Image (spheres, rainbow, N blue to C red):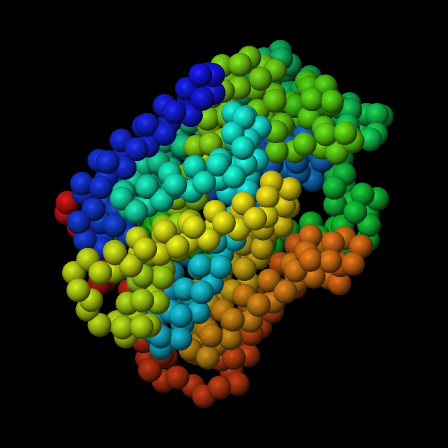
Length: 524
């Protein structure tokens, strides 16, 4: 057994022990869906960071910075700045007015059945697409790192994820994310230290090397990676390049505040004050991590030979960090970084499955099909577990069908675009606009969902490819996000006033900002 396989096995064993412990405490819906609302601020901050720092962050962004320099760093900036939106707009109202899902906030003053049905559809869409991207990434990475074939690797990740969610619920998922965040930060700190040591701990020497780094690919002349425009400039991407960068940043900054697997984390804490505290913790951890992606992204560009991180003339952006770890720290460190990448994927897919199953069981099954009436004890949790199996099976099947060559950035971009275009407009209008009504929410959710999906299908990453693309931008946010807001606005003003919804606005405002009547923590 190789060192990498030993580390993988150790991590799996640790997380299964966590799941066994958590399963004993899973008594009731609050424990299963929200960990009994017993998670502290720093714990939830670590879990949010663990949920957010996906394989795309750890592996993809370091590769983007290595090959595209400043333009790649914009991904890091976008992911971090997104949490200001979460902190200022979403965290407190969501925790105070909701119970288990995003739809609880919407249904507080709007007609519950239509908004819950569409919110559940949006949640399932975002979660499944994001999960497929993680599964495809997991299969490709594990296939290369520990020599397991793509299909068995995807199935293995899927089975482990289902064990965490089905038996351990939100408590197990939370602690898996905490462990993963700690491992990831440890790996990132050590790799950054090695890179800085290579440059004699001199920032002047480090950035001087970056400015002279060989750009790689088919070009052998050095280019300044500190110069903007290597990916999104007019010379590199054509006249639409700069607009595509703006569109990408909009999707990242606004999409995070609508991602279901991030939003459900705020129900695991006892009150809104702790929710805000957890966002501050998450921002500090995520900010430090994304600063470090600069070190090992630029470090790879200045230290590694380009043939190690290219396939032919194309950049191998997903493998930059593990290859750098192998070069700087040998096989043991390579194995550790490989295990961290595996942990990263497992934690994210567990969070995605948890949010999807909670939304279907709580929103669609209990409140749409059964009109919010009391179910038999434990029925909602049972439905959530069955949903987790179904979502997991669908994601595994589609990931295997698509294979390792599918563009995972395309899938992740779709998830962020849907979240920003469909979920965020109705959340903001529900909390801040008294006139907002059910028709506006239905219009915003449905049109935001459809517009983002259609635009990405017609984009250069879509079904017609770069040559046949009808929509010129890879990232649809600059168009689909305004469409989502406009649909919600027009759907509201062109329909009759909903006096009942307006009457409840003051009640929602008081509860959202004071926590009066909010769900409390449950004892185990």
